[in-house]
Image (tube, rainbow, N blue to C red; front, side, top):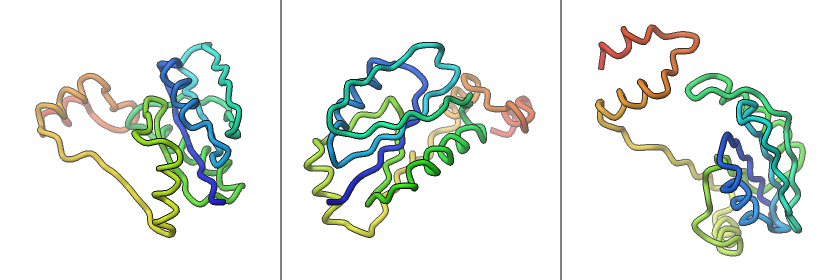
Length: 150
């Protein structure tokens, strides 16, 4: 049996996160969860029956910052201690669009293949909106110089 590892980085909306965990609750899955330290003191009490859940120590995660990569590394270090046929890196706001049988059947028929997704290039006006909202200039960019180049 090929097991799947779900590596989840979560930062808000614990009701949706609980729903996500419930949809991944399958004996063929191991779930590794890292919650942003800034998510507050809210505690998650998942009622999983089949999947194995590992909750990692929280860290502060900032969008567009190395801390997000560190969160991924932390998850991978723990998840790769156990052999899995595939590793899914998702956010706590994601939800699968297919059931676990369909997901496992798909990946069983594509053994050895990797699947990556990325967002299409977005227009400059939308990029400006994101930068103004998230302001990922925490460590290394001059915000005004960056915006003037767009």
